Length: 199
Image (cartoon, rainbow, N blue to C red; front, side):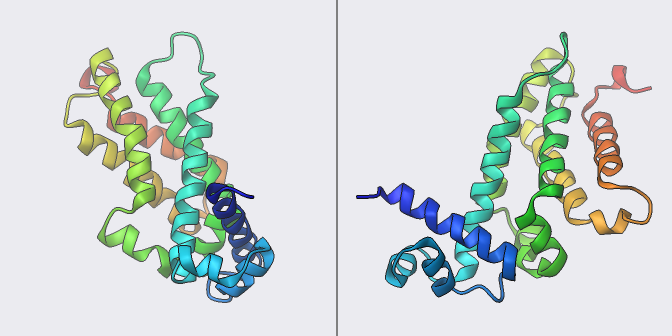
């Protein structure tokens, strides 16, 4: 018998395929259940509607991206914590800019992100802050990240990455996505640098 976690992953995998193919508005929980090979009540017991399912799916996908960036390590010898933080934040942005689910929602149904863009933090934000805030504090101890409340610096990094990713169309006539990510790196590095590091 499949574990609860495996069933939930199958359902979310099916939801990912449905949303990528049809968008959120045209996806139903019945479609998801059919594609996942489970009964409708199995899906409805876990999620009351497609919006709730997509919110959990977005959180799962962001966590996967964050974990992949953390695991990537791979910086140059002698890399500062600030440089590593910027590299990872920009790596997350690059992944989001290329992710079919995020791009589909940003391009066709951005209103689904409005609550989490303008009004409150969601589970995806909190997962990201759990990763970023301790690294900011580590960088401050090292001396490569400027003084300040780590929670404030971490949230500013988060909002800057989010704003860049969700606003990419505003730069389309000037920059491709790689160049946009490079600009984000410059912005974050300047924000996090201590006064002695600023030119």
